[in-house]
Amino acid sequence: MKRSTIGWFAAAVLAIGGSAFAYLFYFAGGSGEPTTELTTPTIPSTTVAGGDGSSTTAPEAGGTSLSFEIDQSQSTARFELDEELQGEPTRVVGTTDQVVGLVTFDSSDLSTVAFSDIVINARTLATDSDRRDRAIRGPVILDSGSDENELITFVVTSVDGLSGEATVGDAFVFSITGDLSIKGETNSVTFDVDATLSDESTLEGTAQTTVLRSDFGIGIPSVPGVANVSDEVLIVLDFTAVSG
Image (cartoon, rainbow, N blue to C red; front, side):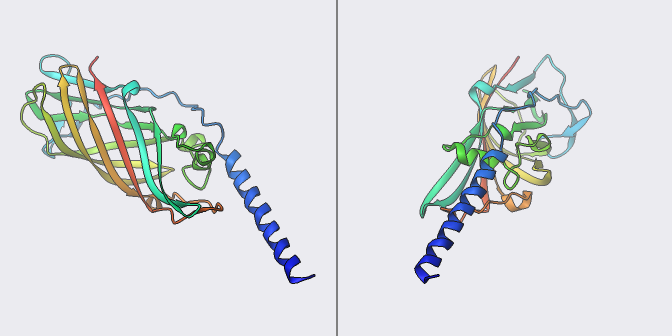
């Protein structure tokens, strides 16, 4: 066989193999339709981490106690990471409005703040490419196409930087630390939070952190044209929470 023929044959095999691999990952991710209906978790009535790092009891409703639930119609969770796509630097952003959570605090004493678990449906994360979305839901990346890895959860263990009173118009800068579970792996991470009590019934702001995807067993499939995918992933929650 001539060298040119061998080269052509090898290129064809690689192209077919790459296409088959991409095909498998395209369908492995499923449709992206959630099978788990998100409901807002409750806040434990037992002791929780207070705003000053100590343990306290979640405030009961009524009086100066305020309770805010994430409004999905006004909130999004997203991830951002960098890659090279066909040789061009690309910022990949995936978003979903499928996020739930609850926070309560006594407006006369912010150290009483208490959080429920924050839950995100990872299967519904969407980028600007349906093919990429299916790959993300596949087993190498998030494996969110499987029921056991459909949800991402964040269990708050401590809060730092909240104290004093809260009045309408106040802005707060604080951090929350907790156990983040993705794809069956759990690591302690800290979110930096900027929040504003816009009015008596609305709390809005942003929480963000940077994690390493390798810490959660998140790989990247070998796909032609995709290279140098960053290990660092920015996770952001832009939230509007409303009182009932």
